[in-house]
Amino acid sequence: MDRFQQLGLLGFAAGDLPTDALDQLQARARQVRPLEPGPEVDGLLLQLGARADAALLRQLPRLRCAVVYGTDHSGVDLEAAAAQGVTVCHLPGYSTQAVAEASLRLALQLVAERTPRRELCSLRIGIAGLGRIGGRVAQLLIRGLGAQVRYWSRARKPQAEAELGLRFAPLDELVAWSEALLVHLPLDGSTRGLLDAARIAALPLGALLVHLSPLEILDLRAVERRVRSGDLAFAFDHADASEISFGHAAPPSNETVEAARERWRLCLEVLDAFLAGEPRHRVRRADP
Image (cartoon, rainbow, N blue to C red; front, side, top):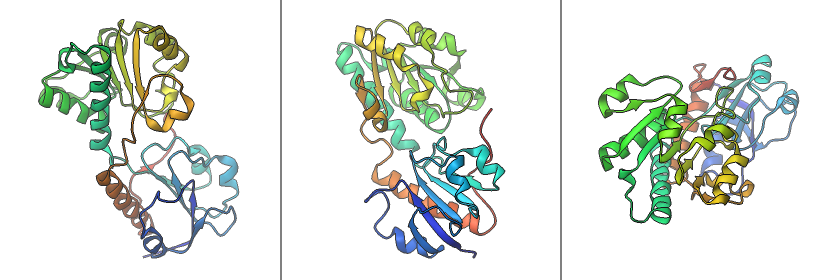
């Protein structure tokens, strides 16, 4: 199997990787070290939240592969990477169960605090985004709690509709209908600003908004106005806690023991696949 000449690590702090990570990475690269831009670097492993923009990529002229240590790849300039011939990969699905459970915990917490005489399953629940995580949330709500759930997704999911009895609704209709709206969407050109001020205003009085997705999907000022007026309850991903002074921050939702183990296994699998000439979980370009 091929090896990297130098694998650069970007954005990692102590404890982010398994204790034996260095030994395992050194089996795949002649050198493994915190990133120092230069011509020796031909592999890059980025922590979630780290940025590899066009300026950084230009300082890595021999870079062959960049692997994001998570699902969200919005920190990588995909157009610049493609122009430079860099393969970008990410790690989808490693925390599906953990994030789905966190979404339900937050919804239950908001119900207990806001409407203690109501049950979550009695609310009209909308899910925006029926990918891996949104689909698992729907399963838990319907099969576990017997909740009434509708969804919107960029592509309809007829199999999930048939298996779970899910009903699709256009986004504006879903927002106006949902007493609890759970958002599980990736950030790309079609979702940036998707939940704008008009849609936030259309949420029912006293609605619950659970948002375990990138903040750029929301109009945060519109959310803040409604939260501070007392007619909207809001919970969001813990990673964004430093940016928000209102609502509830989720505990780390993708850092369970099981998710951490799966993330590392998938990371090594992606590195090995690239070195074998068969890239997996490749992000080819920015979404339109």
